[in-house]
Amino acid sequence: MPQSTSKTKNSEFLRNALRRTMEAWSKLERTFSQVAGGADYQAYLQHFYDNHKDEPNAKPLSPEEFYQMVNDESGKRPRCC
Image (cartoon, rainbow, N blue to C red; front, top):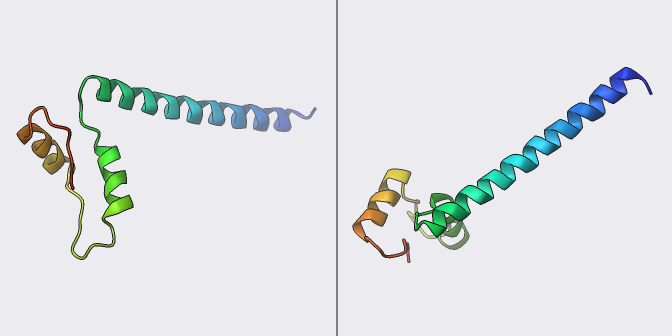
């Protein structure tokens, strides 16, 4: 097998392994945050764009606004609707 083909396959394997590792780390991080009672800004954004993007003048909270809302509602699960 030519060396360039072997290097290409190795590079592709490493890129895929890194991508899978980063995806797993991200899921693990979200899980730990939720178990610890932490707010998940990415989940909030996903909910917003799934449910409110067509509303006139609708815009999601900034991360700062989101976490302030979470702190203000101490102990309640953050909700936009």
